[in-house]
Length: 415
Image (cartoon, rainbow, N blue to C red; front, side):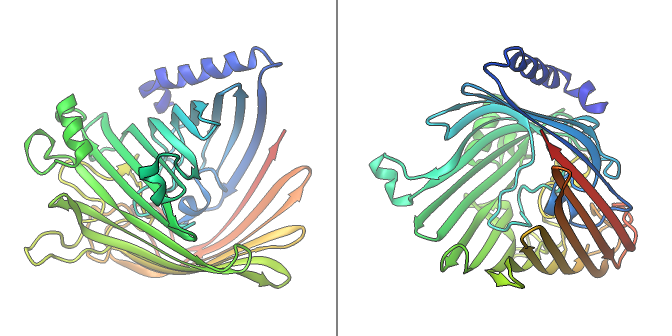
């Protein structure tokens, strides 16, 4: 009930808007989804790959459209993930305009900013969602403005929200900006930036906001602000159904000369083809959040997702890559869509907390090992039944994940 206590006005407004939409069923188009999932023990990367509710929790979701207004609400309870607030898990109320390609609204929902389907260094599904107000361009379309035509189809988002973590000031603010564009066919580029500022005992006036907005945060009132910014890119060879794609993302934890510094990165290679009489996607991916010292002596170990004032976490969970700071992972993943069922699998090698930082988000000591998982899904009783078996070979004491085998099941039905 913590969310309803701290953000009861936000939840109340979402509830009122949703009820009002249902008050005239002739105008409202509403869908419902009931979901149940359980897993014997959590494992590293589950939420980042599948989302907060996958294999964990009981929830009911509603999606309503009334004219240009859209409302989404998910109420429920997670069983394994104690970081997720009970009752209101997701909520979103927005107004669509510009041929439904723009939306302005207020919401609490998962964001994934990355060219990788599985991992994001800056905003992923790993941590519980936080409330925010936003404006978003959803579909990538070419601008009619002559000076912007060269960037090709583009989309993006700007938001300002609020995160909650014991290791940062109460009511801390978070500003996010994303711009994606395709200057030439099959080359997609994504510019991303997130800044944390304000909160109890910290400057949060309009002047501070402007300094943070333009990146002027190395001195003055905005000096405590925590910024992460960078770029992602991908290039596809061949048609969508039978193709190869290379991608990468690099973000910097600090700012120097108006540009990001103290970089960490991910890179991947994706192949789409026909295997075992199934449409298949095979992905090889490497993620590295270790940071070396610069020539001037800045940066160094434990730089990623760490700041003197702000933690890059919501409810104790890192908002970027699931491996957290000072860690590495190499994974081989596959997805196969058969006629009546689907299979996904993952084989990953991990080094977590390489510097043995006792304040690491996952473990107080360095841990190495593997995570192997196999998942399958099929249609059953008008809904989707999923099952997963995973093995994690190492303990993560802070995250309370033990080594061993875990088994999970999930069922969802829309009506």
